[in-house]
Image (cartoon, rainbow, N blue to C red; front, top):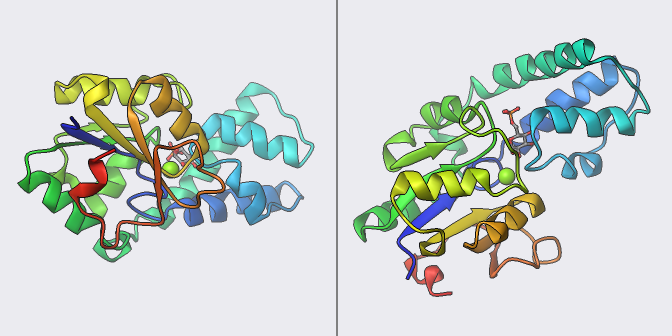
Length: 213
Ligand code: G6P
Ligand code: MG
């Protein structure tokens, strides 16, 4: 039986992928190459430094470690500027209603994101009170598809991995949930997220029945 739900943030609770994209595109353009929305798909669920590696590979550029850290910080500065303007209106449809129902029925809720900006976003959109635990990029060393982020979330909720269900929009995240021995519901398109136990296109109209997997 499912006793806890673990939510990824970017692309599940809010559509921050567009802000990540704008910031990475700005960096690519500054470095003299193009970066498309299709390229951006490869960065979903991937850590900041790994994302930079992929971006530089696309642009056929290479830099020493120190410069790479500076570039990642530059991108993050722009990203932080974008997300500082976020508010409740950016919570994706149906998310709040679903979280409310889970709380009412005694299901524990955790965040499971590798973003170091997760706390800022949860606070800006006023969703922090819904979470019993928040595991983010400041608490893990291994990014998805490593299961660390989800295992830590289960531990903090006081649950066994098999009692948890993960909600994820990224292929790397679905693999991480599998490796953690958890059920996983994909949020997005079945063509991309086919390896999940179930795929939904969003939370509008979704009820606790979805957990009968
Ligand atoms: C999430 C997003 C990725 C992002 C990563 C790190 O997994 O899907 O696109 O690169 O978090 O985010 P951060 O806010 O720490 O740069
Ligand atoms: Mg995501």
